[in-house]
Each structure stands twice: as C-alpha cells, then as structure tokens.
Image (cartoon, rainbow, N blue to C red):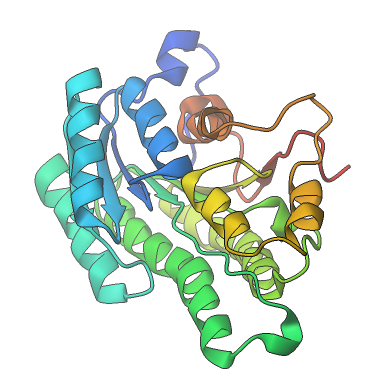
Amino acid sequence: MTTAFADVSAAPLADLLSLTGRQAVVTGGAQGLGKAIAFRLAEAGANVLIGDINAEKAQAVADEITKRFSVRSLGVAMDVADSASVRAGASSAVEELGGIDIWVNNAGIFPSVPVLQTPDDTWEQVFAVNTRGVFNGSREAARHMSSGNGGGVIINIVSTAGFTGTAPGLSAYVGSKHAVRGMTKQMALEFAPLGIRVLGVAPTFVPTEGNMAAAAAHPPSGTDEAMAVMTNSLIGRIGTPDDIARVVLFCASDLSTIMTGSTLLADAGQTI
C-alpha cells in the first residue's frame, strides 16, 4: 500500500517553510556543513539532535542552537560507521526530542591518496563512514519514521564527486559518493510506501574546517590542481556552508513535497 503525500498547494509560504514541531538529526553536525545545516533547521523551528564523533563539540553546538533559536537541542556521540552507535543516537532523538521527522546524513571523510598508494584499510574506512554510515543512518531513521506513522524526509549529503571524477587522490571518496547517490534513489523507492521521502544534496567545494585541513595535509604538488578542480565556479565566488544549508532546508521542508529520489546539485555550475 502506497502512502499518499499531502497536497500542500493551498498552504501559505510561511507554513511550507516552517519546521515547527518537527525533530531533526544531523550527523557530523559539530562543524562545517553539518553545523550550518543544524542552525538553519533550528531557525525554521525544528528541534535538533547533533550526532558527531566528537560529543563535546556536538553538545557545544547544541547549546548554541538552544540559546539562539529557543528550540530543544542536544549533542550525542555518534560513529556513523557503527550501527549500534547510530541506533543509540536515534533512540536518544526519540526519547529526548519526541521522534524523528528529518534525518540528515552529513558525516563524511575524504583522505587524499593516489590509487596505487591506497592501502586497503583507507579504502575500507572511507566506505565505512561515507557509504555504510548513510545506510546505517537511513535505516534507523526510516524505522522510527515508519513506526510513528508520520513519515519524514531523509537527506543525504552527496557531493559533486557523486556525479563526476574530481581531484587526483580521491578515488575512494568519489566511489563512496557515487554509491550514496545510488542509495538515495533505491531508498526513495523502498521508503515511499512508508511516507518517507529521500533526497540528496551534492555540494560543490566549500571551505569548511575539514576541507581546508584536507587541502593543507597534501601540499604542495597536488594542492593547486585539487583546489582548481574544487573551486571551479560560475557564480564568481566559492560556496559557503550556509549556501548548502539553505538547499537542505528546502529539502526538509514542505516546499519540496513533490520530490523524492533526486540529488540536487548545489554546485555553482561546477558540473556543467
């Protein structure tokens, strides 16, 4: 039996954008894109759980969110590659916030190693975090969304690397993000009868703490070429974390109710 998604055509714009009364989980939310996403979801009215490998930083972000937006927020330790850790984080969202309506799979890693020098454990770690982590998060989110019979939306942070090759040394990363884009389509098919939408957002390069640390870790021979690839933009500037957060907010809101299975390119024209 297929669940019919609500027709919100008559709703005013403010209501379509509002997330008041909804509960969101953002993985990797202690910094960078995840933090910006959590802030925008909270500004729209959602209560937010920040799941991150660094529990202290996650709670600091949660405290800032509560202070700024007067919503409920908490930070928890979450290793997305560990299904038990993800399950515990999801349970915390249900117990402390009251449920899960929005789940953003944002956590990811991107070590830069040429194919011929890539050890097995590096390859496995990238896929454990970037791909299995998305699977773990989506599975837990869908279990809670379907058990509550309210449906919801899962948003996977993909990357332009899910559409094309990119800088040298990122074979594992590119492979993992192509896989996430495929999972976004398949999960949309499987979860639609449960009233759950699944969308992807594929950002261009954004100078977050993680991205800049990764660039600094591989100077100087490959850095210029890598940065040239990652910063190719038709809008005259590099993207910001909030540029991506606003696209995620659109996906999380009722503005995008007609959409599922798509991956939205937030790429400043990079992939044209």
